[in-house]
Length: 206
Image 1 (cartoon, rainbow, N blue to C red):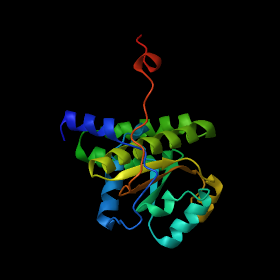
Image 2: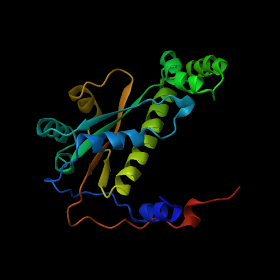
Image 3: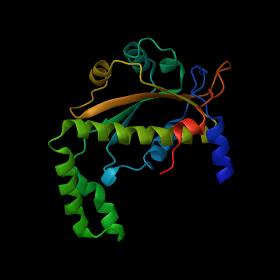
Image 4: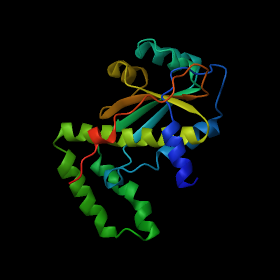
């Protein structure tokens, strides 16, 4: 995809609210979206995210209840629960091992990064949660762009009961349900992209 294609995609992407309930995605399509979402950056390459692809009618019904009855949860082909995890210093070595084996990361750097993660987040639950939200949000953004590039609509949701979602879908301690992301084929009637604030209000130069 060229730069102009990406620009056109971003300028035209909408937050869909209406989905074709008869449209379905193959397992391979769902997996490809997650694969591309994991290309997002994360601090120390923690990759502290997880994705629950909710596709069955029964699971969609449970998730819809936890999302205050929002129809797009069940009408989209898949609704992802985008999960961020508190940084795990103990597990970082295994996630960095492929980089060491590929030869571009010095082996000694693993211990340095592991200590840095433990120092930054180990005793600070607020920072740990912030990092979980940050990483999961970046991954969700990549997924939305990947979906749009494939002609799919998406709609991010923060209107849900986090505790209920966590209980219904077996999230573990330290996992945060950051957002729901409905993905599928758009139905007629979605709004175009809503106007954005002008640059003069959001950009400053230093």
